[in-house]
Length: 201
Image (cartoon, rainbow, N blue to C red):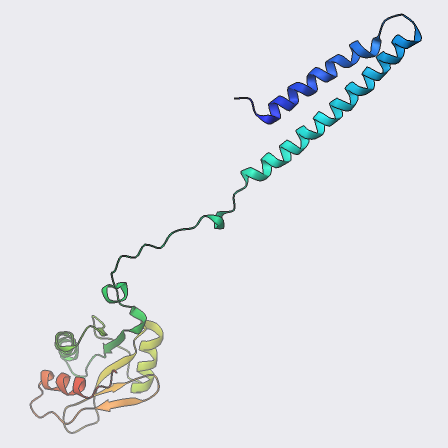
């Protein structure tokens, strides 16, 4: 297929090749020389005109090839599915961690607490899989460390300075909740009391 640029180039070549023929002329009178000169000028003018069309055609072709990427529209297909419910936003989910409890069986008791907490919490609360050993600083400081390094919103810990077994919840700002004294040491009752307090909401 012959393009406009190819056709213009062929016409330019034909006119340029005719220039020497028309320009040379033949020996004769002055009228023949005048006609020959006129043909030469006409040929040169047509060659310049066709060359200009060729140049404009090249420019137009280069502009047509450039297609901005943002001009292609992607249609939005309605599926009728509430994707927010299928894949809830993790940023809206509360994250809770359990600090290692004091005593020889502190890690095991903390793991049991995590297990019961996972069973009784809803989908809007995420429980960290393992107990965190954050040292012996204040509860608020440990909650701050848990937030900065593990993105934990609340830290559950066991109160050490108490005559009865008590648990509490701390945030990076303050201690938010403290359980009642547990005489039987039932973790299930503590978790139920914790969730009923709505401290995580």
